[in-house]
Structures are given as structure tokens and as C-alpha cells.
Image (cartoon, rainbow, N blue to C red; front, side):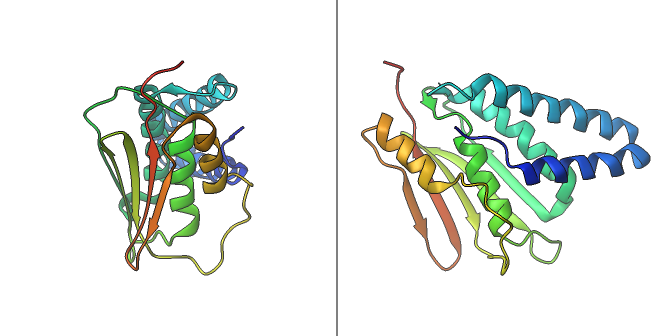
Length: 177
């Protein structure tokens, strides 16, 4: 099952360490969201599906931590109005983690990530600005998510890459059977 990347843990603790000395209020907010993320991971790790609205709330906390770390170098938008249906737990977080891990994030080259619903899919798209050196993988990624969706859905996950964008569409499951 998916787990939050250990690099994320160490990077988060490093960010927290710097916030403690510079911005106590922001450090407290960071700790609360960090705690929420790990509570969610522990609560969902053995579930096959989770309600889409729960996953999006979790993803927003995950995004907030990254925005605290990267500031204006990271631009993320979520445009989902229909929260009906279910999704594999931590699948969107894993897709976001891949965006952050595989692309340059800097003031000169901000990373833009968009999440939206397209009928019965959640779409995660980022502008493509590949890193030359990729951090060690934790063994969880697109292939793992894809295989899990093949097992529970009639609709496969879709991956499209062009010269400007990397896009992944994960199916929304209508109901738990």
C-alpha cells in the first residue's frame, strides 16, 4: 500500500525546523497540517477506496505543506465542483509527489499543477520541466496506481505526455460494491 515518501518526511522536518525560529504561527499551522496528513495516511492505508471529498481535503493539506516550502515557485489549482464518487486512497497525493519529484521547482521556473474533474476522471496535469537528476524512488508510482485501478475499475488510468505537459487521469469509482 502507498505511504508518504520518506523524503517528504525529512524535507518537512527541515522546513518545520526553519519555521520554528522565524514564524511561530506558521510553524504551528505546519505542524497541524503535517499531523493531519499522517493521520489520514494511517487511517486510509488498508482501505481499497475512499470518498473523493475526503481525498481532496487530504490533498489540500498536502499541497499547503509544499506551498509553505516552495512559496510562489509552486502554483497549484483545484477546480472540482462535483465530489461524488470514490478514489484509491493516496492516489492523487502520489501523482502530486511525482510532479514535485520529477520537475524543477524554482522562482525562475515555477511548477504549475492543475487538478480538475473531467466527467468520471480526476485529472492531474503539470507543466513539464524535467529534473536531470531524480531523487531515489520509493517504489510507488504510476505503475502501482495503474495496476490498482485495473483491479477495481473497468476504466484504465490514462497517461499523456507532450512537449509541454504531463497529464494523468484516474477514474472515479461511482460506488463501493
